[in-house]
Amino acid sequence: MNESFETEGPDVEVMLEKFRKEAIQKFVEACYEAYELIRISGVDAEEFEDREEIRKALRKMLALFESREEYEKCKEVAWVLESEYPGFETTPDYNYIQEMGL
Image (cartoon, rainbow, N blue to C red; front, side, top):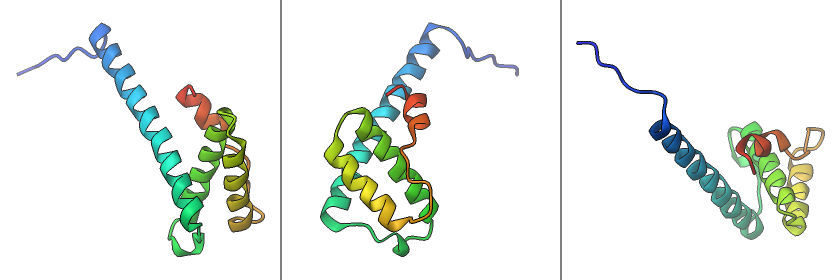
């Protein structure tokens, strides 16, 4: 039995755009939730196994907040990056934000 599924066309494009928008919304919500946790509890990256993933997430958060001109949040996230990851790249990850179209 050879079934053919349509992988192109308006319906697929509409669905892909819907999924993309949902992913962006979830990312933005997660950044704000993480920021609130950091603000309330702080971050001790030593407690976590994958410090590199945390650093990457913080860089993405920093880029998001900077793109939205939320400079107070930028200041706090930058401070966490610099204090928890001395000697590592702590600049905003603009590529990720651009890929998402934010």
